[in-house]
Image 1 (tube, rainbow, N blue to C red):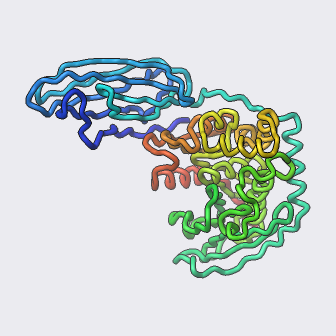
Image 2: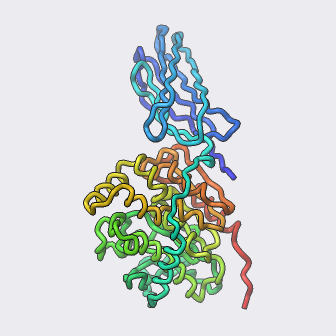
Image 3: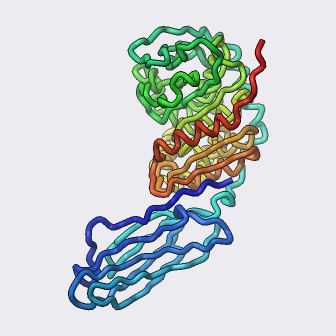
Amino acid sequence: MKIFLSAIALSIAASVAASAADLNFKLGLPYGNWWAAPQQPCLDVTAYNNGSASETCDITLTVNTDFGDRLYQFNQSAGIAAGDSCTMSFTFNLEPGFYNCIFTADGKVIGQHNIGYEPERIYSPADYQPDFVEFWQRARADLDSVAPDFQMIRFPEQDTEKSNAYKVTMRSVKNEALTAFLMLPKKKGKYPAIINYMGYGSGPAFWDFLPSYDGEFIYFQQNIRGQGLNKETNTHGEWMVENLEDIENYYYRNAFMDAVRGVDFVFTLPQFDGVNIFAEGGSQGGALTLAATALDKRIVAAAPFIPFLSDYPDYFKLSDWIGGTFRNAAKEKGMTDEQLFRNMSYFDIKNLATLINVPVLMAVGLQDTTCPPHTNFSGYNMISSPKQFIIYPDKGHGVTRPDWDNAHISFFKKYMKPVTKK
C-alpha cells in the first residue's frame, strides 16, 4: 500500500539569471516526486520573463542515478516575450530506483531534487550467512542468561499532567548496565505500550516522547549502551565500528540485544495490557526498531522512519560518511572488504527484515543523504508481512511533523489487538 503526499512545487526564492537578469524559474515536481508504473516521470520548469524585452532561455536537465552515474541529459530552448512565461516539460523512462535531477539555465544551476520510481521494486538481495538465524538465537540466549535487575527510579522533573516519569536501570548482554526513560499514565488501568529507539549518538532526549501519547500509552524510551542516558559513561568509542572484526562482540550485536531487553522490561510492568507493544524510532532508532521487531516476536507492529544500517554493500557506495568510517576501521584492523561485508551481513537491517512477520509503516525523506532512500527500501522490500510507506518529498534526514506522529499512532491503533481481562 502506498500513501501519496501532495507535492509542493519548489520555487526558486531568489531570481536566478539565465541569459538576462529578468528571468525567474519555478520547478514543477508532481506526484510527491516519485512515480509508480504505469505513470511516467515528468518534470516541468517554468521560466518567467519579468523584463521589458524578449529573452531566450536555454534549460538543461541532467538525471543521475543515486550512485552518481549520469543517465540522461536533456536540453530545451525557448524564446519568451516580455511579461510572458514558458513551461518546458521533460518526460523520460526509469528503472526502479532513486535519481538526482539537476536543472540548469545557461549553465547556472536553478534547482536540484531527488526523485523516485517504483521504490517497491528496488532489488538488493539478502546476503545473510548460512548460520544467520543461529547466530541471533545464540545472542538471545546470551541475553537471557543475564539477570535484568530492572529498577525504576522516580524522575518527577519530567512528569506531565497525565503521566509520571521514571528512570529505569537494567542489565543487558555482557552484563552492561543501562539507564532508560519511562512514562506511565497516572490514571489506573491497563495500557498499550510504545517503545521509542533513539538516533545515533543521541544524548538524553526525554521529549522525543510525543504529547499525543500522553496518558494513552505507556511510553518507554530504551537507551542502548553508550548512548542517550548512557552516553556520559560511554566506553565503546565510535559505536558502529567497535569490535568490527569480531561478530560475537561487535557493538550492534549487543546493542540489538539492548533493544530486545527493552521489550523484556515492558512486559514486567503491571500497567501494561500484556499484549500491545509497538516499536518506533528514526535513523539508528529506525534500525533498532526493525531489529527488535525481527528478533522479538512480541512486538505487534513497528514504525521506523529514515532507518539506518541497511544494505551495507550499496550504502558504502552511497555515503562517504558510513563507507569511509567502516573502511578506515577495517583497514586498521587488517580486514579485507570481503571480511568486512561478511561480518556486516549479520547486522544488516536488510537481512534482519526477512525475519519480520508483523505490520510495518516506514517513512522516508526523499532528499536524505545520511540514510539514502535506496537503503531504506532495500530493507523494506524484504518484509513479507503487511506494510506501508510514506515518502516525504522535500525532507532530508527527517520527517514532517505532526504528519508522521499522527500517521504512526493511527497505524498502531489500527493493529491494536484485543486484550482478554483476567
